[in-house]
Image (cartoon, rainbow, N blue to C red):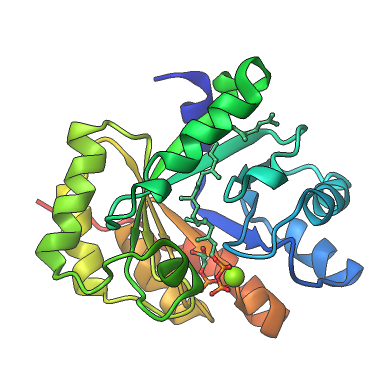
Length: 239
Ligand SMILES: CC(C)=CCC/C(C)=C/CC/C(C)=C/CC/C(C)=C/CC/C(C)=C/CC/C(C)=C/CC/C(C)=C/COP(=O)(O)OP(=O)(O)O
Ligand SMILES: O=P(O)(O)OC[C@@H](O)CO
Ligand SMILES: [Mg+2]
């Protein structure tokens, strides 16, 4: 396993910060000093070079790893510890599978720090989310359908990360369980609708890494509670 892949293996809890949203200094400090394993900077809309650079500089006051989830070519900012590259698996619009990626490679060429890149196989499951609308994802999948996409990522494409994305709503844990049962090598990320301890525990029991986003901007105290909830929850063993 390569170094960059190894570096995310211990991540159980991650906060996702959106450069397009405002967060006060005290709140940012609380988030960065919460005991979370990393900050992931990303959003599906309104992410620019300027707001991404500003957020990176603010997070850099703290010691934890800071990754950029690249969603937009204009916001390819140098200086992150690693770059997570989404590929949306459940869309028929190839732009979001590899079209933007081709353009990025043509544009940035030898500037790309390949050793810092990790690809994420995204399965977008909330049809009412911005990311589903943006990418034209077919989010009405059965659990078996979602698990089939996960196997494409894990077994056919051998991607380092499978990302179950319910952005904005808490997901169906039966679907998450079925995905979990099929993923053998990829690191399984879950994100979507975690607003407190109970949801954090359920996701942590099934997934390797739990991502918490929107609640940071609504109720930072609730967001902070999710850190220990995830860390204290062991992953359940499945046969
Ligand atoms: C030179 C340099 C520093 C390079 C660094 C990295 C780089 C540019 C490498 C180039 C190689 C490469 C292959 C780049 C990919 C380029 C790219 C634009 C790919 C498309 C990625 C993609 C599929 C985006 C779709 C949207 C998506 C999946 C976003 C992920 C984040 C996400 C889902 C956020 C949640 O959305 P949010 O907005 O928070 O939702 P709410 O509003 O509901 O909260
Ligand atoms: O914002 P929420 O709903 O917490 O989702 C987290 C993350 O998966 C979004 O990409
Ligand atoms: Mg968000």
